[in-house]
Amino acid sequence: MLKFLKSLYFNNRFFLILLCFTAAFVVAYIFPLLFIVIKFAFMGFVLLFLADIFLLYIIKNGISADRLLPEKFSNGDDNPVHISFSNNYSFPLKIRVIDEIPHQFQIRDFHFEITLKSAQTKDYVYNIRPTQRGVYQFGKLNIYAQTILSLISRRYIFCENKDIAVYPSFLQLHKYDLRAIHNKLTDYGLKRIRRLGHTMEFEQIKDYVSGDDIRNLNWEATAKRNKLMVNQFQDERSQPIYSVIDKGRIMMMPFGGLSLLDYAINSALVISNVALQKNDKAGIFTYSRKVENRIPAERRKAQIHNILETLYNIRTDFAESDFGRLYTDVRRNISQRSLLLLYTNFENRDSLQRQLPYLMAIAKMHLLVVIIFKNVELKKLTETTATTTREIYQKVIAEKFDFDKYLIINELKRYGIQTILTEPENLTINTINKYLELKARGAI
Image: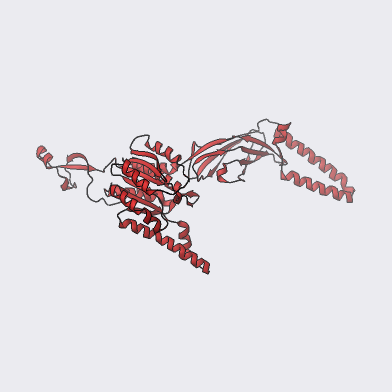
């Protein structure tokens, strides 16, 4: 009996009709001739109410449902959630679904309604976009079934307490992975860079054909074979590519729901995979008060999986970043000249000046690319029309901060440090652009 009462819910139509009968009985008190008619109508309503209960509870399992989740979610992307419904009744139903999605989304009223014909199976798909890495817990899948009378609903509960992990954006990884394999990265707007000079990695000696560079003629092989032979070179491979992620307080700033740290993590995963597809070695490490989460640059099958797991487990208290410790660690642990993609941020020139000596020291040992972010909110403010004194002050200050970013870029370039200034949402594509540019120019 208790289980029956827990699953029984009265709909708004039931209370509305009950309210109408209450008003009708009041009117019948004034006009007694209406009392008999209203009384019989009320008895008919009671019979319909009992019939509604009978129809919904005549079958023990009138509704079947299942929530189908992927193995893991991709951070910052739309992830599909599939729900399958089956109507086991011999009549159509209208169902209201309340899915208890994880508390991280802070959505308290998520629901939808669908109609199921007799013995019909139907699928419903909705998308959710997580903005934090970690474990998300789905609660109950609540289904409220009602007949055409819609006086009551019977509650069904499925799929209690399902955990799912949210990883760095592997959907972007898959998208660029296929492009890298087929050399179609330029379809995403990536630039073709004119190659300067020759690469240094020898591949083979082959017969000369029209169009070959005569500067590559191999005279010793030509003399032995008594015909023209040329040296053939290929792109230099197995260059160490490190994604260096600042997880200090300056990376806490959110844009589009994601922090700058998570944008950097998603980009590091993609660029590591592209580097591996281009036969380079990929590695990562993070720094704040100390250097950690280190994966040495290697090229092996399990490397991208190790990088993904490490990026997933990055945790930080957003403390002040120590660039001096970063320089010391790089000098001690990275002996081969490498490409270092440094994800960080500077909001003004003063903050850059404090760290510039360390960046210059790193740039002497390695090819350093400093990646900083445009403040897109400030950009919007500078593009608005100011009408009041307060808005004028705000716009001028925003323009100053926006201009400081370009001064920072020029300062870094003055000391021979490669830079990327990008909107957070374009971080991945701009980083890949820079990597391919440097590789095409033979800088790494």
